[in-house]
Amino acid sequence: MAAAGAAATDLEVVRGKRAALFFAAVAIVLGLPLWWKTTETYRAPLPYSQISGLNALQLRLMVPVTVVFTRDSVPLDDQEKLPFTVVHEREIPLKYKMKIKCRFQKAYRRALDHEEEALSLGSVQEAETMLAEPQEQAEGSLTVYVISEHSPLLPQDMMSYIGPKRTAVMRGIMHREAFNIIGRRIIQVAQAMSLTEDVLAAALADHLPEDKWSSDKRRPLKSSLGYEITFSLLNPDPKSHDVHWDIEGAVRRYVQPFLNALSAAGNFSVDSQILYYAMLGVNPRFDPASSSYYLASHSLPHVINPVESRLGSSAASLYPVLNFLLYVPELAHSPLYIQDKDGAPVATNAFHSPRWGGIMVYNVDPKAYNASKLPVRIEVDMVRVMEVFLAQLRLLFGIAQPQLPPKCLFSGPKSEGLMTWELDRLLWARSVENLATATTTLTSLAQLLGKISNIVIKDDVASEVYRAVAAVQKAAEELASGHLASAFVASQEAVTSSERAFFDPSLLHLLYFPDDQKFAIYIPLFLPMAVPILLSLVKIFLETRKSWKKPEKID
Image (tube, rainbow, N blue to C red; front, side):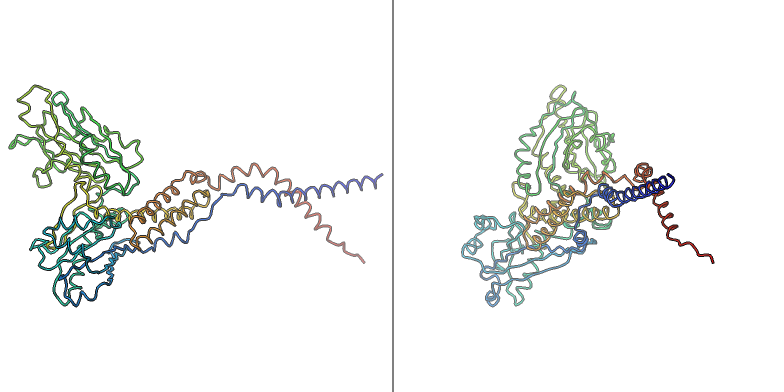
């Protein structure tokens, strides 16, 4: 019986060891990998090498320029050399990590018969009308017509002319270095109509250090897929003023044609409102000499904040909002004028705030108070008002007057308020700005994901990153090829995809779940199971080690 009991005890011990080993094997071979796989942070692969290469991206902005020579514009020997192509390239000196080079590709050729006929007319406007081709020129391209040195097409004191379309006219010269002299003049005209250092500096103002380039270049709006424009009439004294304005007709006649011409740069929505008892928040000062009130230039920044709280247009907007306010001063502070830094009254009686909008003060004619009782009916002169607001709108979009070369005749904007080459210049600037924004966003995202390892990277986020990188590369290639329209579309896609990936909500799911919290959760789960298994394994190891020791022989 004792032997049988000992055998049963040994059998139980063997079964216990096997059970402990089995549980340990299941926990290590099956449980641990399963737990590791089910609790790991999923991170889809990203193109980190391509993103790091975007910092060293070199942008080549190619501007195709067709130069057309008429008869007697250059010496006969030079005309025999036509056609040929000349490339002028220079680097834009900006303190930015992305190197930008401007490339003017000038294709020289002779004028065709209908071009010779058009350029022999009496005025340059008639020549432009006749030269209008059935199909429009490509975005970003320019055509320069070189006429005779003594042609009556231009005034005698003018050497060149810049029109509203993508065309310019320039006088030739009878000189043995005619092509070199004319080539330098063409570069000056082409830069005025396309790309300059100031245009690119304004586009990259948010990415440049605070120096001479960026200090005065933060007025234009940032690039966006859409913009909202709000016209507001502020009547702080409705008991004295019954103000009427034909804002719908003014928008239809003046604003909408300008926005239609600008539609390639984004989508626009326009609305209007009338606010009563809306004060500026700044007490005007009285000028006894002129018996009027005025707002000093240093007080203008304090005007916007109290008014902005009443507008309520930017709270629910997905796009940047431009506010244009027409303020009719109350009777107690009429007339009201705006002064500049020198203390002189501003001619337009208006001012604008960068990336916000503009405010115009509309004074009531003093004779109106003597002719009728209060409230006085006021019909707003919308022509005068829209002239100011359109000028401010051009400035807010970075459409400023070009730096003209010497003795250059400038036609001025068309009836839409925007010249075709001004739109091209805006698209150049927006394309460069979009590429810089997308590159910065992708680089920041890659650095963030590299530093914090427990951020989940889903497949849709990775696809947006890949799409943004491909769009940046495509936009750079299109800019180098001179395809401005497709480059701008690709740059918009790059910004949209990069920001969609950067602000994806899934990136924040495990951002605030550090490792110490993981231990606090899993230790109470695994410790009760792991301690018996570990103690059994230690006991088995010690017994096995003891059984391996042979007994010593005693003589």
